[in-house]
Image 1 (cartoon, rainbow, N blue to C red):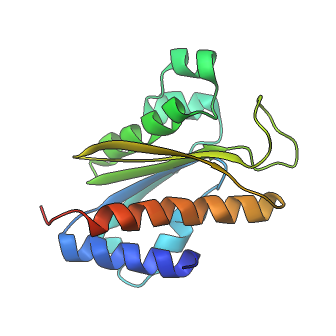
Image 2: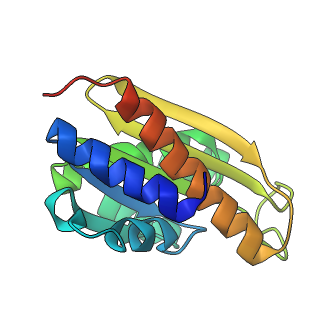
Length: 162
């Protein structure tokens, strides 16, 4: 499935289940929020999207701990988890999703370009995935957005209505 198809499926599932989603994006720069809001009726399920490109934003808006950023950096599983949990809390949303990674062309941290961590936080807990994508900056960002929406869809397919 491609980005727009995943977004449409996610919006439909969220509507069916009476749930909402909020996004916290770093390396994708708002691609996930844009894909969701391209779907007619998305305003019923989406109200908050944060592009947290800087560590300062991650800490101040999303509650990512300075200790995590100091010890592990912005591109790690713990940061992705805290971003998803934070945006869910701030938005008072049913589900929070996040993405942080190295889109390139030059890595800012000690990870190869294409290293991406995604996370989803909901009432059932937090799930984090590590991915390694190939291609140029645009391709990596698009693959990361698809991975987040795919995780959301698969999680929603297993969630019962609240």
